[in-house]
Length: 313
Image (cartoon, rainbow, N blue to C red; front, side, top):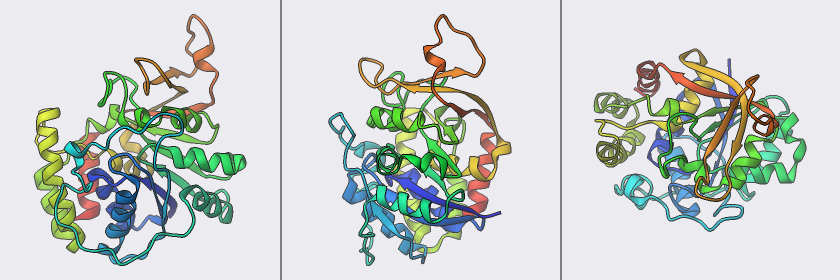
């Protein structure tokens, strides 16, 4: 079974790993990469997306998108996590290709309309491009096959604030719009991505199987691994963005639940993802008025990282 996807990304070390999967896996038909700020600024994100495709020997359309949030000021890029260049500050070769002349939102609208009912949107950064695409074509909700979002946190707590995950915090207004658009949506958040640890042994297999791209993946992994040693006390990294593709291709490795999602857009809890399970009563019904979505709550983390290493090794 082939999954035609658009991969919306802010590469980013874990984005690079996920892009490598999208470029390699035989069941993924990668229609394009759309870029956003987040882990890096927008120009760096686009550069990295072009570079990763070229290193894999693929000519994939790359459409540049959101340079900042819909409403809020932009937060600084987390150079201490991904490096100033997004790929662990390693030396990178020059890019030969050029970005698509369309902006990301227009690319999404054009691609989905050309193949209604077929295309899955996989977004692993702040979701402003998806929000902008909905502004261009509100009927997009009826035309996509599915939307998979790497972001949010239901029970795990936050990674950039006590309650907020980075992608939701970076553009909470876009997240609220996208999570409540009413399209078929699955949220793959910290509840499962923090259960997956990509080890040095896994990365050695990946490096051996990925040629020139493998050198970049391994070099950037080393920088990312140091952050996770200090942040979570683990020897490895959490391959957040690859988990979204793992859910798409291996959903049996995840435990999910249906319910209603909301995102806090201001105040001390800005960026927090709220989840009201389907059918559960609360003191008021305001938390259960948004469209139903599917949320990942548990995962076989060891199986996911083995799948990543097998795919790329």
